[in-house]
Length: 84
Image (tube, rainbow, N blue to C red):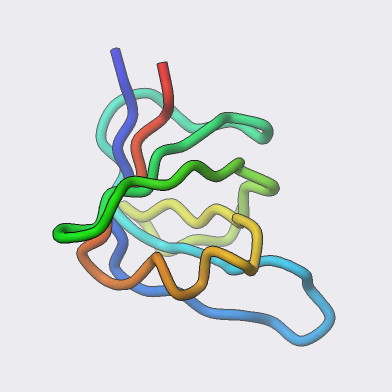
C-alpha cells in the first residue's frame, strides 16, 4: 500500500533547517529517509526526502520535515506521495 500526505499547513521553526508539513496521511506511515514525490497541479512533480517525523501532531494529522528548499513547492492542498 502506498502513502499520500495531503498538506493542510506548513511552518518553519527558528534554528531548524527544515520545512514542517502537516496534513492528513492516507496509507502506510512515512519514515525518515523515505523519498516522496511532491505533486502540485500545473507544475512538474519534484522529489524530496522525509528528514524527520514530528511526534506532537494534532490527532488525525501527521507532521513531517522536508528540506527548506521545497518551501515554494508545498502549500495547502499539495500532495506528497511516497515514491515506490
